[in-house]
Length: 575
Image 1 (cartoon, rainbow, N blue to C red):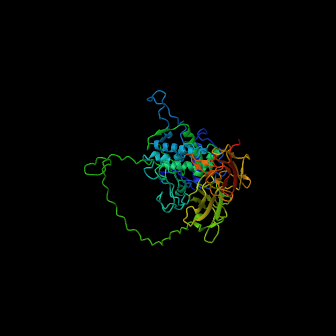
Image 2 (image 1 turned 90 degrees about the vertical axis):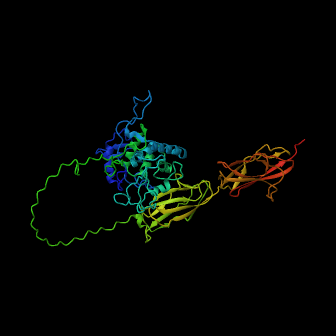
Image 3 (image 1 turned 90 degrees about the horizontal axis):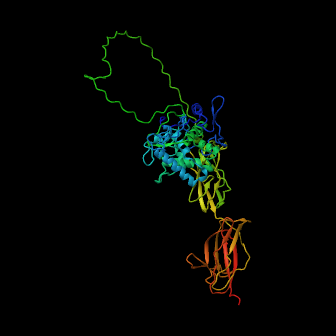
């Protein structure tokens, strides 16, 4: 399968050596942010961002496997006008490397448009998806996809069994990669199954999340790069996002080179005709996946035999050889014993231990003050470091981790502890679950109950002190406006109810006196869908009076117990 994928070695030693030599051939104008030292070694001139050179809390999308190291050509990719084209109309006849298969190109552009709506501050350029798609799969093997964007045959990375690559035990029971023992990167954007499980998206609206579909994979890659509120118009944040996809400086430089190349101009080519990379990051050549054309059959000579071979010459009889002297038997040497492989940290984990609070609570719109934390331990109860732990939000809630994601992955520290990113409550109230599991290991998880409570107010006060009066059958000149606070601070977005009650002792709804009107002009004396604004203010609709005179009471209450009673007077006008 090495011919099909460009992936990266686990430790990066071979990768960096090969890619650095390749990148050195690229001019500075082609690789912004890439520079060479006095010995020709490559470095990222642009700031890669704090912590960008480690695996990051989310590991990588690809499992740090192999990738293509081919670099863009030196000439500009801008298409040149063709003599056959109409005057002033450029024809798509630029460099072959600048051609992107039609369906693949459409998937990249649709992903950019989707992210522009869902995460506008990310500023994702489709050319970045094209650059990653180039180094990951050669644009889906030159665009070998069907009309729906699904690859004609699976694109699978090497088995991640620790033999030259990372060791990642099976996490999908072979559902995506066909391997129930170890994981493999899958599809045109080369997601490992454990990452696709939470990062996968439905990009073509068919109701499925298929890593082998270029629309699904491109949209998933866009969301993966945009998580943690990355702004890809900032070079350091773009570098950090790319390194989270495959953690190698050589990989970063290669992607940036293709990004700059595609930004100078591209053109659409038919599916299946895109150019294919030829070198992997492990130093091997990758032959084209196109099947060889068979040679025409040759005409046999009379009597059979190969028509292109000369007639065989007669062989003289061999001189008999005297019998050899018997050799004494040799005692066989037992085969060398292969020592058992050292288990990875993940393989030694026996269980998860609770470290944080069992239950966490926050008010709607606030950040949970409590942290969700666990520790990975072996059978003896000793901490296990460097283990990937996944936190997943489960249930009907709009709460998210920092960056707006419902799944977060982090790596245990030296003490075996993994702490979830900050958890932000949404507007939906009630309970939900945060489930903690070990990535790459089938173990019982830990569930934490999280509760979102409604916003509250403990005080209500009118914003004006004018008397509220009206003549029978008329309307009150002033509208009632109140302000809600909680522990002295403004209480915005707090639910409230306003009711015209019978008396201070009888809070039932009054059937006479002042009233509100609904949209159809009908009498209403209780309003239940009121909410204070961001400044804690609530202005009630206009009040009207029937023919009953006297003093009446309007009671306003909020979530949290705040209550305010307002007097309303209906009296005949003075003569």
